[in-house]
Image 1 (cartoon, one colour):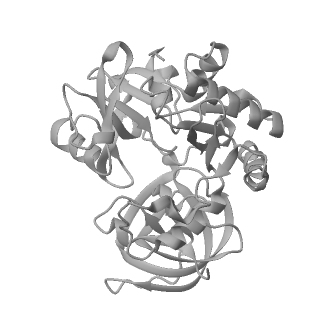
Image 2 (cartoon, helix red, strand yellow):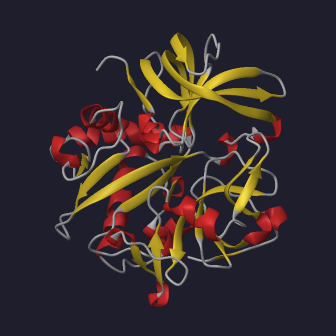
Length: 366
């Protein structure tokens, strides 16, 4: 789906909206904290004439047989830094350049909610399209939510999907809508008659996959993923397929606050290990996931003296919806000092870094 680019002054994007540059590189808008001149992004796909991956599952065939490759792990970061450094924005509080697209570099945008509305109005073109409509009808009928509360991302958004092999990747917009959806999914997963089941209900779901986290076991991962409820599978009677279904939370426009303009400086201090109690989980589902916490125990590296951390912030998708209010969790990650117009505090941030797989956030007692 192509959406014509309008003036940069009128451009308004949020998490999981897509940006396409003149080079044909496809970026995903990443979260809600952006400098005025552009958007912090995650690079997702590139045309095969400028990038090719050795990973078999990376190949995508688009409209008019144009081919793309998807980036995995840090492939995209290295690709941008080494070959297309112009696709970076300067993050003033961090005092460094990070992957992103300036507003004057945007050729097209694609929005998940608009693409879904287009698919809803069309006669199903194939079995995946039909399954998408069936799942959407099932969910909206049970919850009272509207199709406008949802979108699609990934291969469905960009026209890369394969009718027999692709997944159903939905966006759900808004906190109240997410709450209703999770309540329904909790019941549906337990119902013998429901075609929707929890993706992580079976212990063998990780078979054949290499586990890399050092302080987070596969068993702990499965337990946490299971209760998030946004990851399911759909038993499609029409095609005979078991299709993975994902519902990614994104904020409604009225839930988004401009925090960038009040943020002065973020300083990396070292490494921290902490036992904390979650006091507010209202932002736990989004990117980044933010948990307001009370510190119970804290140890730091580099002889840094910090009495407590006020927040845990996760840019690692595995640690979204990881803990809920009043739960006690163990956290290990990057210790940061945050300075805003009105406050100075410390936080532990989980993000892409050299010690990526040493990071963790998990319930203290499982």
